[in-house]
View 1 (spheres, one colour):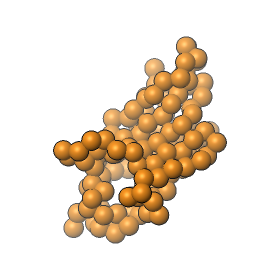
View 2 (cartoon, helix red, strand yellow):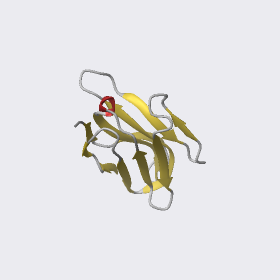
View 3 (cartoon, helix red, strand yellow):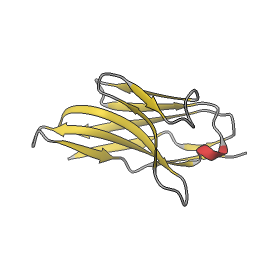
Length: 121
């Protein structure tokens, strides 16, 4: 079994910063693409940022220049540094990772349980 656990969400004022973390655990053979998604109330889940196995990054236009995604390969961890936060960034943020487990050597997509980010004065 694989688990993704997010942390770091909370309440922050506009223009503030937060750093989200996601840790993957389990009998993991390899972790490929990883990413952050978010879902605001009444809206569909949307992609925020992704980082490939070789470190290539992609950002949604709404967060480019304000958010930074990174990963720690040794720890199978994913991070999202969020700066200059806006009220419209308020959402539940989810970690996603494509992981190959030793038991099957198959690649599957896993999701974390989500962490709430609220940007409000």
